[in-house]
Structures are given as structure tokens and as C-alpha cells.
Length: 329
Image (tube, rainbow, N blue to C red):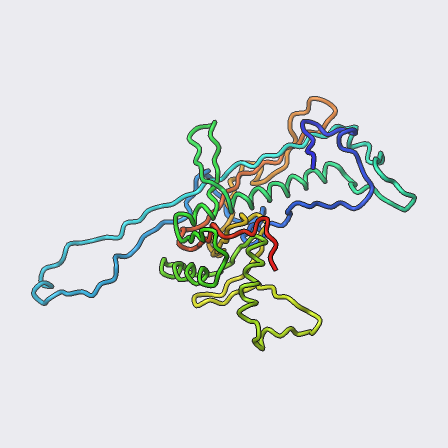
């Protein structure tokens, strides 16, 4: 849809009768699971720690004789390292003339004799809500697809690291154009276990095609089994919403913001949004901007990043067959 720039007036933001619909993705399941725009953690530094890592040497069988034990070996200590992410600025502005806000009864388009009402009772409230959903969509996209960038001066934007980029340096599997298979899932879960994943509260996020592929994969496995029989004879189909693995049980969640060729496996127990508050204003706030005439100019402002924990907690499968342009039986 067309976006109006600079200022909303009676003429470029007309009112219409009828029910409002939006075809774009409005659900942000990852953000909702980890606290939304009103939950999470706070920071007083745009860069914040996501994990302090340490490890153990490879397990070995000791071979220390009585004679050798009489002399203490060389001391060794565990070193630690810190990983971090950043908050990024989300800023939106609304500018509505007094005349636009006054003309709620002026309608365009089809108006019938039925008791139709303006689909938009209050322009400012609608525009603010629209911007809040836009910010939530941008946050969801960033938390999944964000590319990390740390500001080095005031002209460089902070950009929060997303989970796909995090997994690219940890547990990940390149499908190389292959279709999602049970073998791929077994391999990625096995690698997560070998790499030290905690498996606390696991959720698999998939785009539409991969969600269908997953359901198809396990419907074939269940075909002919008594557990596959539907509870009603007039109901067909399979919707896989949970998987039982050798290492954990995990939820399955369709997410419109996932790339068509990728799957994320996230331990949501160790993921949270991080907000940096502006003193005296809060973490995501609405405020009036300087008035220069007969219009209300409002900004919405927030600084938000992702606390994702260490990479070994999560995993990804990328490069899957996305079914683009194909029709299958």
C-alpha cells in the first residue's frame, strides 16, 4: 500500500466506510514468546553482554604415578571470554494536520444506505498503532535476520545481531538445495548435543513451505499407523506442532519472517529483548515534536536489541529447497 510522506491531510488520508484489513504479517511469534515490546531486560549501555564463555579441556584418563604425584604439576586455570550485542534505534514520526483530525465525518469511496461507520474512528490512534506494529515487525525481522554492526561514531548505526547470523558461527547445517529430511533433523539435533546445547525450552521456527514440508515428512512416517487415525472420519490432514527427539521435546512455530530456505531451532529460555531507556521518557515512548503550525507531529522512539546467549544453545538449517515456482502432487 502507498505510504504518505511528510504530512497527513484531509486529501491524502481519506476516510472510508468498511472493515479494516491488513494483508501483511502482523504476528511476531518470536518477539511474543520472549516478552514482546513491554517485557525483557534493560541496559544503560548500547552494547551489552550476551554470554561469558569458558570450557573444559578434552576429557582424558589420568596416568600419574606415585612418584610423579610427589611433585605438584604445573598450575592451570580456566580463562573466560565475553560476547556482546547492541541495541538499535527504532524511530517513527506521524504528522497530522488539525483539519485532517477534524474531518472524521468526511468520507470517500462507496457509502451505502446501510448503517456504515467510518472504519477509522480516530486518525491519530490508528497511525500510532500502525507504527507500533511496524516497530514490532522490524524487531521480529531483526531478531531473526539482523546483521551485527557496532557504532564507531555518531554517523554509524548500531545493528543488533539476529539468530541466523549467530548460528552461522555455531551449530548450522547447509542443506545445499536439498529438501528437508529426517536425516537433516537428526544430524542437527546430534550436533547441538555434541556442542553442548542445554535444550531448556526449544522452539523450531519455520517459513510456510518448510512448515508444510515438516508436516508432510512426519505424516509419511505415521501413515498406516493406528496413532495416525483421525478422531473424526470427516477430518483429514496433519499439522505437526511438536516434535519429540532423543534430546528434548520442542515446539514447532510457523513464522512469516523466516527466510524461505531456512529453519531456526531456538532455546527461548535464554533469549530476551533488551531495551535501553531514555532518562525520564522510558524504553519505547510517544512524544510531541516541536509545533510549527496547525498540525500534530509525534515521534515514537525506542532502542532495542537481542540478548541471545551463546551460539551453541541454538541451531539453524539453511539452503533448503524452498519450492519456489513449483507445483507438487
